[in-house]
Amino acid sequence: MFAELKLNERLLKALEALEFTEPTDVQKATIPLALEGRDLVVSSETGSGKTAAFILPTLNRLLQQDAPKSGTRALILTPTRELCRQIVKHCKQLAAFSHLEVNAITGGHDFKYQRAIFRKNPEILVATPGRLKEHLEKGSADFKDLEVLILDEADRMLDMGFTDDVMEIAASCNADRQTLLFSATLDGQQYLTDSLLRDPETIAIGDHSQANANVQQKIVLTDDEKHKNKLLLKLLETQEYDKAIVFVNTKAQTNKLVGWLKYMQQDVGVLHGDMDQDARNNEMNRLRRGRIKMLIATDVAARGLDIKGIDLVINYDLARNSEDFIHRTGRTGRAGQDGLAISLITQRDWDLMARFERELDIRFDRYSVPGLEAKFKGPKKVKSSGKAAATKKRDTSDKSGKKSGKKVEKSKVRHRDTKNIGKRRKPTAAQEAEAKSAAEKWGDGFSAAPIKKK
View 1 (cartoon, one colour):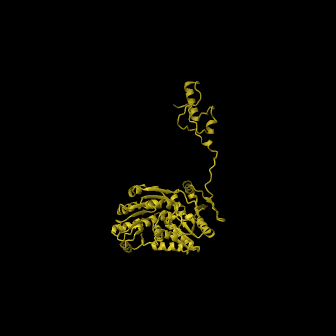
View 2 (cartoon, helix red, strand yellow):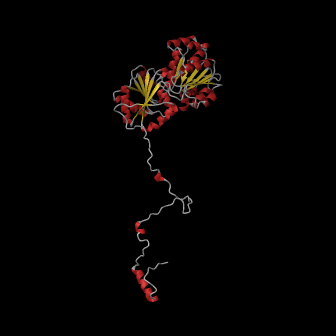
View 3 (tube, rainbow, N blue to C red):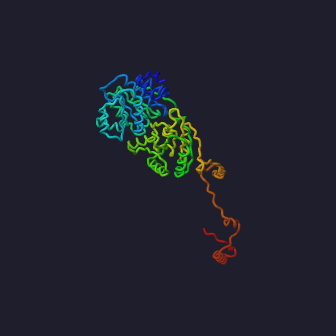
């Protein structure tokens, strides 16, 4: 029970209103240590409740003592605008019965408006590194009073090239702060851990290298893009789902697929990195409110997107690596619910799919759509042709039986060269004339035999 974690009564009231009664494993392990003020490095699988695991102890700390004249007291850095927006929403829900103010600083919004947010000194800021660094350079932000710095999805921030920005932002913060680093994987985090945290406690819940066990994994074999489109349309028509996300690998493919689905009378949304923030928010709200049932998205929606009712994920394009695959399929099967993930596999995807099975310790169930079976049935097994004996090396030994090490070329023997072996050749007319002249000169001792020239 959350009451056993010794949280502030206002937070317990908010948890009750949200009908959260039992903390998850990562929350049980993280919250007590965070309440003690320890620096933490936390790794847990997607959908395990990491967000509340760092919000609750942070809010509890800020509620213990008021600081009306201080600047920002808690800063949460996230890699994407969608994740930032999601955290702000969750933070406001948990702080609903308190006076604590929460605000966001991300790209896609007016810079002057955001400078006004800094002047209001909200207790909690949730920001993306790129835009926050701009405000630091312009002198808008001041983190000298900061009490807690939280890095969420730290691995993703490193992958996106935000390492220098994060280090610069951390350097501007109060050196006596508490630092919490949350990630889906601990791989590659050592540099941040050594540079930003003081004697941190490491918490690893579950196997972050495995896919969510609540998600059923299926594959459908496909031949080409035209075949993929037909399969996708049929799957969306025949599968039972409340909300679905279809993942593709490129922005261009996203727009192309959305255009085709709309041509086929499908009401779909779209989400990719080139859209401005207002357009992104609009598409997300359409999905949340049930105005559309499906969203076509790039990996920008693979992390931090927590929308209730997503029970189907389709990989139109297979993810490029196992980590992105985990985050994509982790959009469903959240909070203990069941989910379904279907991946469309071409011949080119087969080896990558097999690698995911090994790395993630999962087994894909093969599924076929009646009437749309693929010509590709999987890689063919190569059988021995029996020609191995014919390709053995020629014997390169010489007459003495020793190996010469050189390849012996077998000369070609023609029939016309062998049919007269042992037979005497008939002399030519010139040879006969020469022999006759010699016989007349030297006597009968010379015959008309062929004369060899030296």
